Image (cartoon, rainbow, N blue to C red; front, side):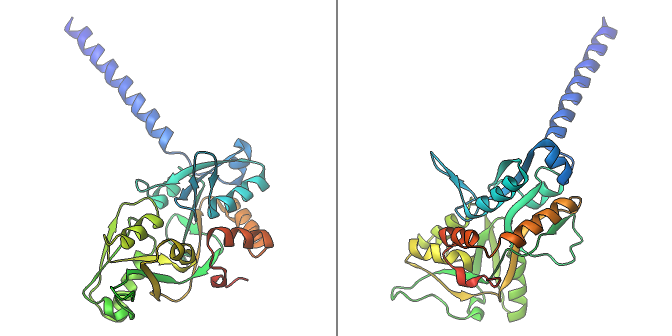
Length: 275
């Protein structure tokens, strides 16, 4: 009886281990290249939230970057599978482990990256702007970068612009604290500044035109960087997908259709160098 009991326990443990392995394999896919995408007829993308990325209402799904990547998958004749990059996800890690094929999130271009991911050709060129409250007279709290000395900037968790803020503090020789919080989109954190819950945050300049129309009590006038190129990211093990996406972007950016999309969602066209 004791022997049978031990065998039963061992059997249960074995079954549990198999279930754990199956769950893990389901979450961790192997990295795919273009041929696997075409063969399966589906491409998975992790895409950032908001109208500049991906959003939905009761009827439609829409967003600037969603519209771009959907045109690419349409050109391939494959289904677009969207994974929302909400506050619980780390896009770079999920791209590296094969959870998605493309990270559709506009981030500073990485040069000579030693990581397992690689930047596509630039999509936009824009400055990083300080988002701040206005005083009782309707003026920004500060007008010069060095006036941030001893203050705190709060950014979206896992923000790709945190490194730039660190460089800024070093360049200006100021004591700047950088905090991060979990929110679902840039719109949400800008609203926190508008509601006086945060003093400062940051925002790419290409988004400020739309935010200015919504948040009259927020100032976006102080730049924190020169123009920097932003783009999407793919895995280094997907060279053919990288090549095909680069060719698509280079052919589409600057067309009348692209300009219409950009004006619809971003309203800050003059900040794209490529036009």
